[in-house]
Length: 393
Image 1 (cartoon, rainbow, N blue to C red):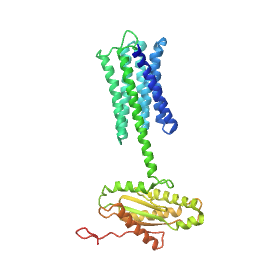
Image 2 (image 1 turned 30 degrees about the vertical axis):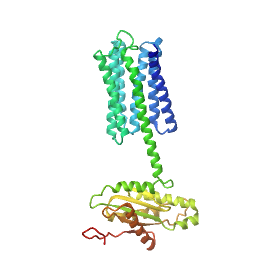
Image 3 (image 1 turned 180 degrees about the vertical axis):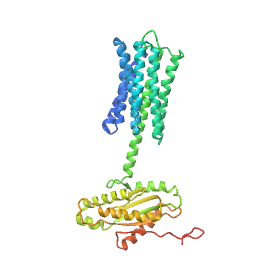
Image 4 (image 1 turned 90 degrees about the horizontal axis):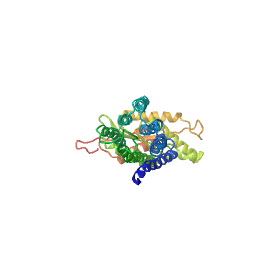
């Protein structure tokens, strides 16, 4: 008796904790709508067990319909939540059709041709279809991380449970108490025992995904420049170092462009540092939108860097000219409309297996030449000649 009471209380208790957990997570991050839906899924799961195990005095068709609707709602909400997390298309028509067919057959086996086994097969078939469709759509959305694989594995596990348990009843391995209420049968005992494990597994999967997303957001903040929204020096160098490990196919090559705001000290001295920050932010936006680079970063006070993994040498001056032209048309808060904001640009195309430090040094020399030549221009480093042995001349 005590053991039975324990299992009857276990599922509602777990459901209450998980419901509160995911609703609080959604409350702290209201843009994550899938967390709200998951909280609703656990709420439905808990209410289904409460209704089935503690409302015996209301036993009848109405209670059976309510319990199974809650279970179906829990599975459906969890499946939709998993799809929403990866922004996959939710197959509304397929899900609604599945639920409608389940409802028709459940009604048949409840009132027209009463059959406990028929209701079990109907509900579990619905679970199997929902989990199979969800797993397939998650795979189609793309497996980009171990967290995505974990979600697919959970849908496979849910599908397996939905198939194995009714199969066991079909071969009389599980008693369903056909002559009375399924409550108290061997089948229901397996539901009470296995469902907490499944609920905890689903919750842990979503919590792992939430933690991974939080870590990515923190990593992005660490690598992002607070003023411009583009990469900071650390983030830029990290991403470029990774990209340089992959050699660009000929005749393409990697390239680096350094840009420095001309006469920036004069802007600060004349209009103040707040306007200077607006200028930095404005230049950063123009470079990010019109520089056509793979990575754009702010590497110093008023200095920016643009990295091109696969580009042609003659395209680089075109990119530089486009940036200067767009900057000439840009309007920056705090500056007079006719006040010119210009940049000088130094460009270097990668030679053989140069590292980023060597590329930066060469681009910086070209930038210095652009400043010496009168500013507001781009200078590209010459291609180094090499001997047969590969040493530079």
